[in-house]
Image (cartoon, rainbow, N blue to C red; front, side, top):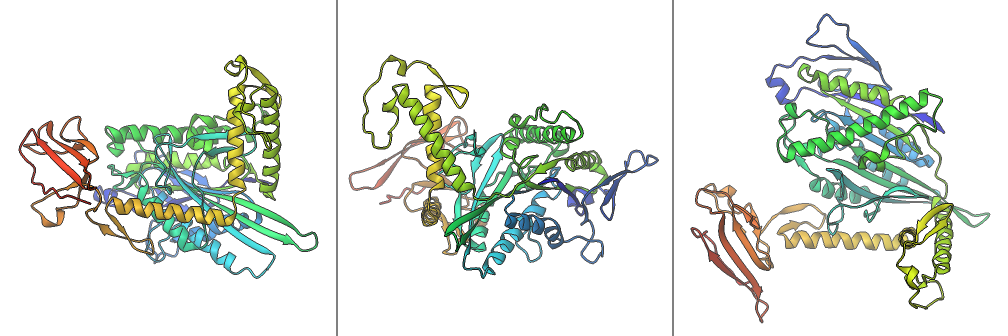
Length: 554
């Protein structure tokens, strides 16, 4: 079913930076229309835009025109949640300059009435499922949380995930993130704890425009499954909806944000992905208005962000965009750019379909592909590279095992190595699809316990309900703590001494310290475990000694 992308704009109050510079409001809203005028050209006519919703949140809640967090959710979030119950894929993403209020609209704050779209949607989802009285209908919910930082994908929920994850494209499933953890949840409290854990791991930093600027794109995904048993045929049918909730990093100008060094590099990567998103939106909008629909090239792969969101942009999804605006005259150029961005997005049409029984169909198609790949590899004499069902032969094959032999597979020429790689990839996906709900719950619990043990080892204490208690000196790891003339600032920093050699100083070292008397190579710690299982430290000084206490830790 074709439907246009739903677009809303929301203007926030002045922040402290704008108030200190006596900023003037250049935006007016009436109904669904938004107008903005150029403060440098007061005689110029105001520019008018029309959207599905124009939210005025610039004033206080006493203003009748003020739009609250709850109203934004009821207009956009609730509608998208109903589409998810119908079986459609759903996507909501927030766009705007740094500090425009994207994270506030999507995540909000912990205070009552300040929650954003994501927590309200999750809470409403479980509220609706708990009201189910149909014995033949059951629900299950899984979540994943990832960030795209400097064009690299990172899992925010799995503490074992080290480094960047690979984005791959499967011929059946489309783009997906390999090895991204998908955790089973049974209540809103579970989701809230996972969101808190993920938010603490997000990359944020201070810029001139925003003290806690999101330096990464965050994608929170809910896989919502509805299972219904037909008593007449004794068959189970499924509807699987994928709900993607995206908080984009802020678009910015280097001179406005004061970005330098790492911050400047981050900003360049952020603007690259947002520029690619703009190109994709423009190309999709032009494609709707031209007759050459299928021949138009859409640059999805130019950025990791657009590649992952490929289905949500002009594909199988019901999509909504919220553009966050600054009302200040000093941000006129950025605000006008955001409005034009949103105006293009409303021209996109998505062809969403109800996802009936995708797992059964997927498993059948994947099994067929596995069998074809096995037959292909066996015909090439590569049986040692696979374990065919009922076959235990591991004989070495001829010299063509090591040559780049090309074979036709589904009308596509692939090498033997590519066939083996595709076989492993498909079998891995099948194993994930065949996991039972109990196995997914056990996997989620093991990851939670592992996360808590890693945090405890690092010296972070966790309550039983998942809340953080505080930081303490870890018992099993040698470490240094800082001392400060202010007692409240003492022992706030932990420096871990690894097994073997740990160098301390200002340049080319493992622990970097700064200070008037700290040398480039100030100290070297030799750490080893003796026969009694005790950790022994042997410091070698090159500069003035640090004030330390060395303890033997069992």
